[in-house]
Length: 381
Image (cartoon, rainbow, N blue to C red; front, side, top):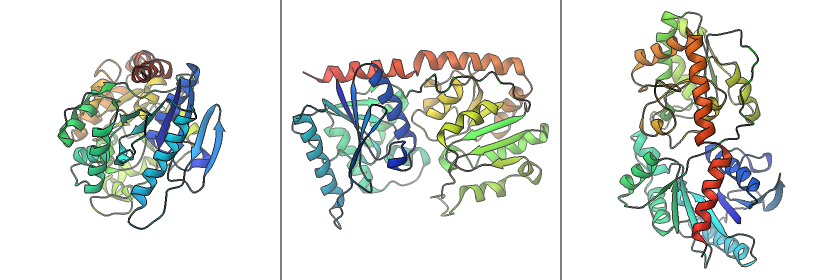
């Protein structure tokens, strides 16, 4: 089968920076290749038109059409023409697109089915983050969902919340995100520092980064040797208008706690595994996700985790079995769970073993690719 992904991002040097959507697409593409499929990734918003091969994945870079006031419409029609051409030439059988900003809202291929996979729309995240959404984004996202031939979601929570925020009653097939288990396998090398707490991901309010300093303050009070490592991009804060979330965070740490914090900034994706491996505990106090790949990566490397207990969380982890789930605003309780893990090697290993088992059974690229392929085939008459 021949599958195409329409996306604003893809993790490759040629295509620029990429986030969770791009990583999820690449993981799934690798799994589909292993199932004998051909995969083409259509990356719009690029600086140039080009086609290149990424280890068997055909990546097609597409420039947006620039015309004041009409760029959004003309770009969509350009993408529609490309999809029709590829379908007519039997290069693709189906196209999958994300819900983010509703790129397919005015794309109506003549024959090629369009699938939307929920990874969290702008409307969805604004709702969880309790801030207003741009009307045009909500308009395009809702129209895209209503016009799609089929709908997927990475979590049941995201599907239910999406129906709620758009006042829809759509049926979604639930297929989660995936990771390459071989790429994120545990390393047996011992870690001499057993007091290292790691957060990796964007430094942004919606991921609980303004709660994390208050949590860590409590940790340091009881464990002065604890160290917090932060890895990820510093993002401007939309709510306050501050240009740096990291600057806002620094003011929230106590003087004693701040001494024990290392912010490393952005690191190459392939280096993330080293920081996960060296950590004793990974923390994710987020308020807004769909189904976070970062959690799965840490779980695959058998790390003890303290994460948010909101919505999607129970579809990833089981509280008290393969990690702890705590609301990000319960600072003392969150800190106590971290301390419990820092002080208990046996519990760390038990959680890590169960976490790896969970990922193997639910989130491997093989399992997710097979489920996705079966879904795609059901659309082809």
